[in-house]
Length: 314
Image 1 (cartoon, rainbow, N blue to C red):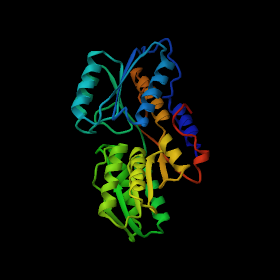
Image 2 (cartoon, one colour):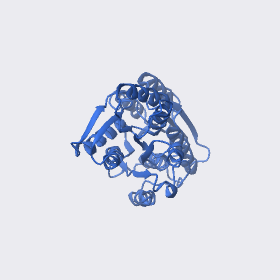
Image 3 (cartoon, helix red, strand yellow):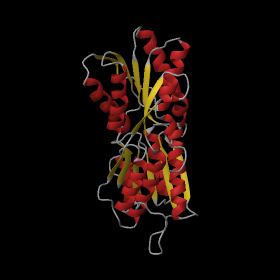
Image 4 (cartoon, rainbow, N blue to C red):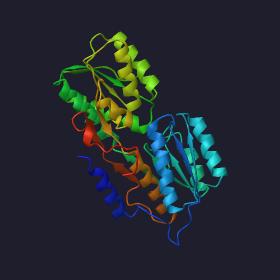
């Protein structure tokens, strides 16, 4: 089930954007700027570490600067301006707003910098590397419908309005819609992509809804927070699913929690691919398709022991 990472690596090699090292005629990769949603989330820490590891394969002396935008568009504009001033060769961007970020992206590209969107789409970039988030949402919510036998009250615990989250919610809704016996009680609350946000949102749901059968959270930190809230309020028999496949969720699936499944991403492979694609573009080789989708897999209590995880190279 988890062989898709190997397959993706093979596809990457076949498409010519897995670049193990610089060749003599290539433009040197001297510096990279990385701006992500939040470096308080282990998912984005893994993206930053992976990008740095791939960049150092290309040039051991490369300078890598990773910063946290904290989902703040103005902050991200400033960070990109700083990268432009520092004359970086490449920017990896996890956009706070996929459309509104475009002027900053175009400004960077006008300065001769290759810009690659990671995890979420961003208008105007040279390429995008992301998980198939619609499929991730579908997998996670299809699991809920099967657990509930097609009947029950479900909450979609939403998050920051970035493309990955919007797509996950879209995929979830399409899976739930196949079951007329499923009632969505709430789908519009932004739990901020954080453990604290998930905890606060879940406390509200449990107060408002005496009968709640399942919760889909848009990422693992929210799932962990939601589980903590349910424990505090002594609520059981609720199925929680999410998206990420993070180390915290591996632990949750192996212990006594309400978390039952997570559609896993591979941020390590994603960032490695993004740097490779960016480096190829720097040297005149554009990918056949500028949007590279990586396939998620569903991690459950049944298969978590064979799950390879994403906290290290694959």
